[in-house]
Amino acid sequence: MKISRKTLGIPYGLFLVLFVIAPLVVIAYFAFTDGTGHLTLGNFVGFFSDPNTMGTLLYSLVLAFVTTLVCLFIAYPVAYVLARSKWKRKSILLLIFVMPMWINFTLRITALKEILTLIEGNLAFHPFLNTVIGMTYDFLPFMILPIYNTLERLDESLLEAASDLGADSVQAFLRVTLPLSTPGIVSGVSMVFLPAMTNYVVLDMLYNSTYIMGSLIGSYFSAYDWNGGSMIALLLLVIICIFTFLTGADESAGKERGGALL
Image (tube, rainbow, N blue to C red; front, side, top):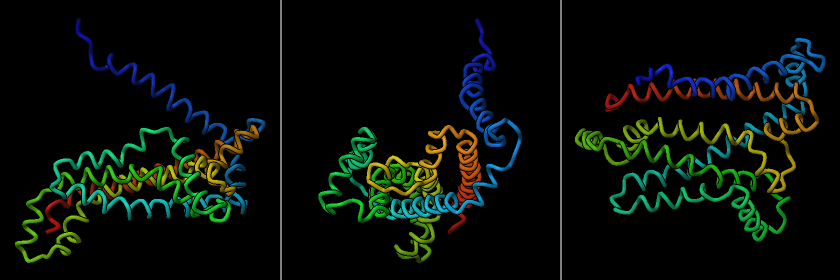
């Protein structure tokens, strides 16, 4: 019996309709309606005109930016050393960085909280710093892996060509290695920045009483304000789509350059 590709794609199509398209339609409906079901843009106008919600958006962006920057500064040297080293068992070292992802998230943050409490005494004294540490600890593997994969596939002949053309190690890194590792950096940034804007569990567990976008959405739905919560969720979706489009364009441009960087 022959089964066509269209038939095999039916389960996937049903999954997309039920768990992707349908929820998005529901979110869009509540975002553009009020409590009585009438179409309105009041939810968006209220969000952008309220200094509290705009402050939450700004705080979320700053927190996500700082977390992403710290992860990048830590992850790139680690990924570079692992990818360029000649160690036979470097995969074991990479596994050590990935292993925290296998442990329950709540357990990891609880252990980190105990360590920070032992060092600081009271976590309420440095809420922003503790949140950045918690976010970095949580998302660092997501930054290391894509950068490592990109550097691991880097063609050695490009570095040899740069050396033949008179470039020293620093120039070869800045002119060849760093530009060609841009796709990995972009992937890592997108995997860290966007979740860091909404991961309010770290804030709650590390005694940071400030709201971010994720906790703001949760507060709306806890108050049964589906319209406000859906509106913020839709805004985040738009931000994600724009960010993905921009980073995807940059990644494609980086691949097209290739050896032309020399």
